[in-house]
Amino acid sequence: MANVCNGCVYAVMVDYGYSNYTVEGTNLYCAKKLHPHDGFDHWYGESEHNKFAEQCPGFTAGTPVMIDVDGEAYDQLSADEREIYHLAFPK
Image 1: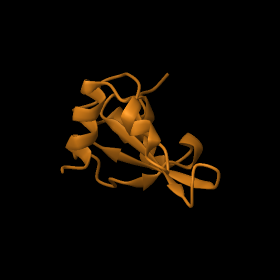
Image 2: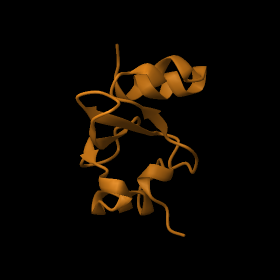
Image 3: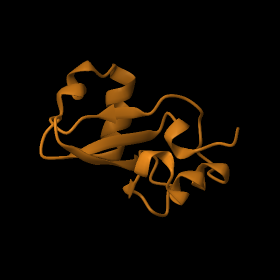
Image 4: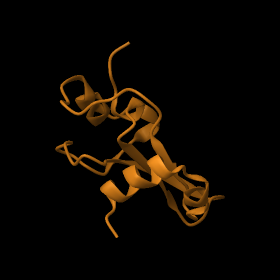
């Protein structure tokens, strides 16, 4: 299977909507800031932008950081995941 952005440890996937009960979509951000369309709509993994990983020099296979609309998932992140999150969204 080809590399895809949502299969990278440096991907940060952030749900958006009114609440966790009304999620409207998910934006994918590159913590390394290598993606030319950073913050693209993931669209269930069907976005053409997801294929950038095939040529990305920073791609590292693994599980992306996932953040829900209400931000409750942040409290459950490991220290490594929080570091990746803050690369994408500096304090």
